[in-house]
Image 1: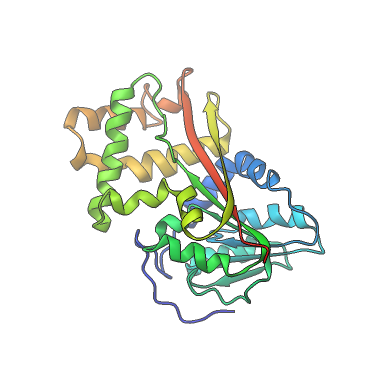
Image 2: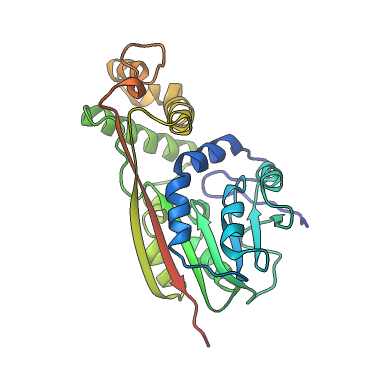
Length: 283
């Protein structure tokens, strides 16, 4: 099921955009904490779940295990490449739809839970997005908004100065690339407020830490090396750092260098994952 889509999100999301590998690596990396968060929702067999912004679809199988064969799981994503990957990943009876989250081709009042991770902050109007998703819920249904890195990440426990400079350089890079201000990006921090302003009640929130130390699992090393060190950081941060700081960061991110961060015995990484849950009125 498809429909014409012409959407560009706040952070450049379009139908043609493809960051499937980054999404898959994050899900493999954060899988234990994501599955723990899903388990905390107390889903029951027979429930209907929508993953709004399903990406490569890793969570669809996790939800299928929770709701059983008598339940249903649907995934929606804007990008064609992501939905193609999700269809390959998802259980055979799972519906995956390429669609604009603001115009979901689904019947209203049919879903028990909407799960949306690292997605609504990409919208120009996150409140409108949450209200649209709320319209899909049955009376008493819930929306679970997940957001990683609500708190600043910690990569270099031994060098807070360089870590701070690298994280600020990333923020400035995104502000410049997408021509947005710091205030434009506040949806990352405001998941509780988004649910409240969208009219949901009984809003609860819980933050867990994704914590990794050496030696790392292959999935952890792959995510940190490729997604963070090479892509999020890498050459594009050069204009935002001094030559000396950029050289030091490059050495810490280089597997061939003796100072490679992921080989250090004292490597200690922290990233937060926040899940805010709100309920629509039962009447």
